Length: 137
Image 1 (cartoon, rainbow, N blue to C red):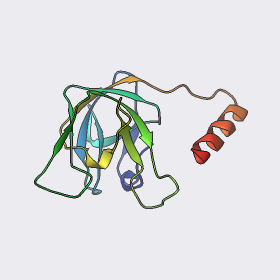
Image 2: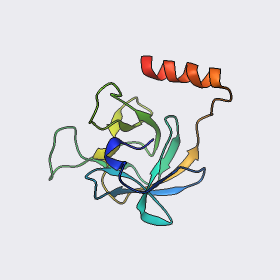
Image 3: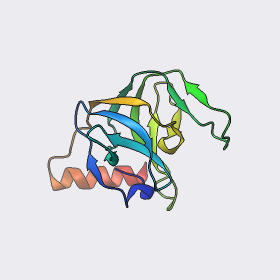
Image 4: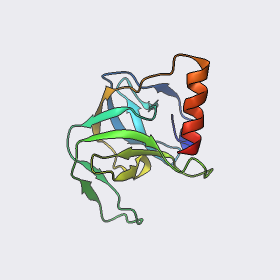
């Protein structure tokens, strides 16, 4: 999935083994850029597992241009949060300690590799159940 602010950016779905780079797109948000084209966003499905080359750097929860902070992990799972709130960022990373950081807060230029894609539902019934669970969660 790609955040609402990336809807006007060319995009493609993530592939296993992709080496992505965090990029601040002209739409005003940060996302993952494709290795073959820095202007193409790569959209992840919730549950996609990522490995970063270094500890992840991000802006703190309060808006500050000067301060940055580092999350003490190099692995994360892509999630979507606050899905009931329109026109806000939903794309986020969950780290092993349970901390969730919005993708829009990541600093530009960080490298991540797609380690695992989430399992996909096989039948219409399974997809319906997943949609209901996602809406409840």
